[in-house]
Amino acid sequence: MSGEAQAPEGVRLDKWLWAARCYKTRSIASDACTAGHVKVNGAAAKPSKTIRAGDEVVVRIEQHSRILVVLGLSERRGPAETARLLYEDRSPAPPPPEARPYLPVRERGAGRPSKRERRDIEALRGRG
Image (cartoon, rainbow, N blue to C red; front, top):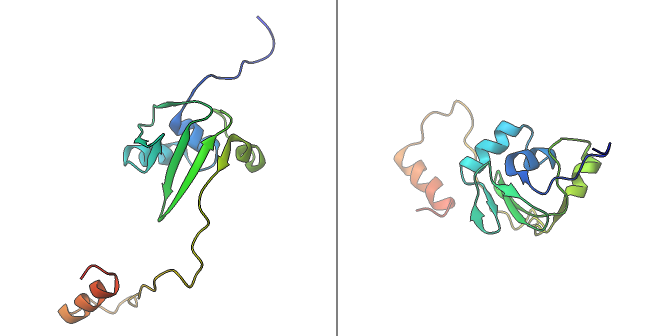
């Protein structure tokens, strides 16, 4: 036996997402995989999916998607500088603030919207 640890050939997806600092905890990463918010090479992936260097991981966090190409593998969470070496970010730039649609927000305590207000809100959101 040698004193050096061998680099892993593959790592569980939830461990890698946690180590790459995509999610704050491993359980949140696991829940995101189970909910279908994470895809590996274009297919929805379970938390136990083994990923390898070169795989493309698409992670949806809130309303934004990040496209990450796996460069390195790690089962341990380290500093942010080390985590950035685990992937190459190929995500498109976020749209400028002017291009984002304005979504009105009701004030807290304003009560339930009337039927007319609800229809107006749905129309603004593009669902009506």
